[in-house]
Length: 173
Image (cartoon, rainbow, N blue to C red; front, top):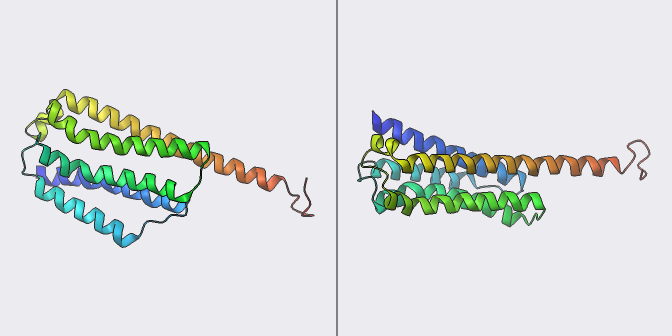
């Protein structure tokens, strides 16, 4: 039963990040290819099933566990780069996604160096878990605020553009 919960938690977090990639792809007109994204998701969950019994706190376990999170964050950041939108708000969002990707990359080595525990229960009691989860939550929150900023800027820009032309006459205001 613990395996089901552990893999389920992994899959839920990864699914959320995949949905983020879909949303950003739609917003920035750089859509993710659904078969590629589905293959990435399923492959990552299958790998997580296989590594469940590997000793925690090893480089091998940490690499295969954190790698999908790093890749999906980097893939989301790449959507902004490919869109060629370069507003200040887009840059902040890009930086937050790049920072999040880097965070998951660093976690591979930090989990081994700091000791993430031999079991899931050990992990929950470790100082590494407290710091890691808090930092991850701050990055997710920061990314969400950056996305809100991008969308608010888009709405304001659209309203400004619409207000410059009179709707009835089609003439500039």
